[in-house]
Image 1 (cartoon, helix red, strand yellow):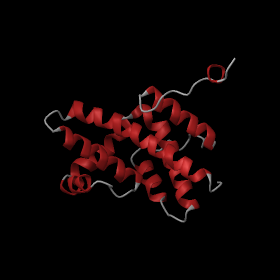
Image 2 (image 1 turned 90 degrees about the vertical axis):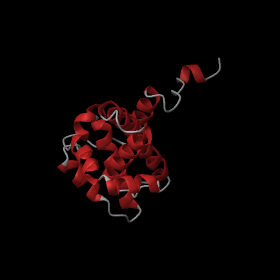
Image 3 (image 1 turned 60 degrees about the vertical axis):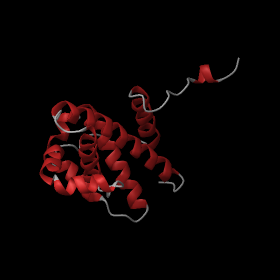
Image 4 (image 1 turned 30 degrees about the vertical axis):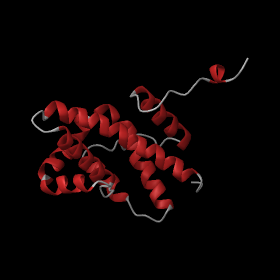
Length: 159
């Protein structure tokens, strides 16, 4: 993969994580109404950082995850069911993240192995081309209101 493409791919992977966060947080809100909104957000964040193999950027998420390890693990085991519509995109995102990491000398195959063990990774799914992946991420992000939809070429060009 071209080194210039890696930052763009990482941005697309982060967008997948944001889509997953929104979907998972809503599911958690519905299933754990007794938790406060910050606790619900921390649980969603802890699940996602654990799955992606990234250390939590927020100390509160890390502290929540440490105290609520069983709950985080239970949510990880249920993720394929609670966020089923996102599993194809999450499969692609995890694979693209691993490819980017590999290009930068980072060993992150563990995330793929965990996703496979949790029933998240759709192994039969073909790896999309980077452009196809980025367009699908963009389409879903617009559908979820995270970004503005792309203007069509006919609308964007004058005359």
